[in-house]
Length: 64
Image (cartoon, rainbow, N blue to C red; front, side, top):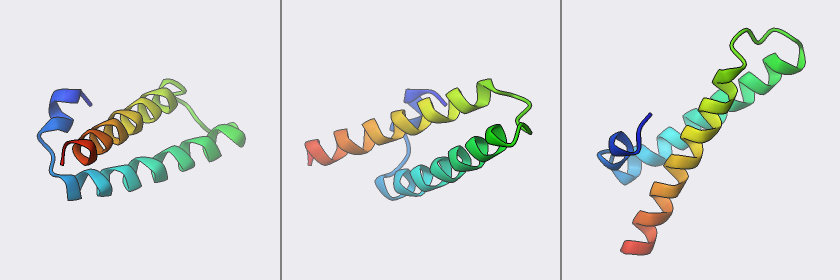
């Protein structure tokens, strides 16, 4: 997910996206711990996407 895509999402949808990405991250970590994770790069992508969304949420809060 690119930052330009995230900038177009509303504040309420950003909160929902954080919850969704957090659940995905939990599931990926669980799969990794029991050695069922096939695409290990997905773990890093989800962590970075979640960080981007949280950054955008904090920017929106600071702006207004």
